[in-house]
Image 1 (cartoon, rainbow, N blue to C red):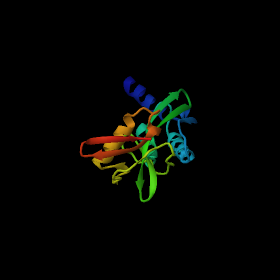
Image 2: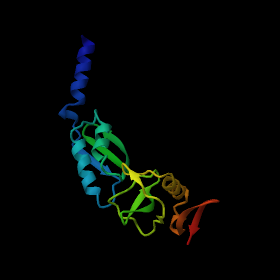
Image 3: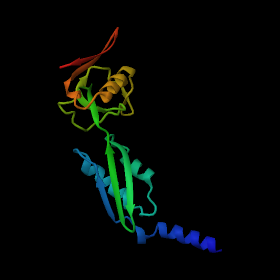
Image 4: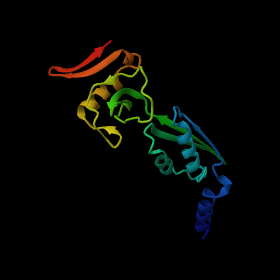
Length: 171
């Protein structure tokens, strides 16, 4: 009986307004879609408590945004929740429907983000499915760019596939 009372008390407390996540701080967001993502995360977090964080709901809330790679959540009893957004970093750009679209190291297309002039536009097949590059050549070229040192990426003019192997054309 005592265990049932303690268990029931814990279940009541972990979802009670006494530990509601009223003070939500979100860090790590940049770019034009940051306010919308921040608002979505705040709305999802306000339905939680500091003792019962449902990370799956937070991830589902931001799943339409390809820029979000991961979330780190930290709580501070009784009311504070800090959500750190880990964003995908663009490593290159591809042409899709006449527009330059940045692409992350894992092939995620970062639609809605501007493709900066420092990103090389790869002349690869930009077939995509589910918001990711699907062609093996595309994934290989992006993997090469991801492996390159960030300081060297602006000097890459293209990644070409030739009969004798892969060529990296530098400026």
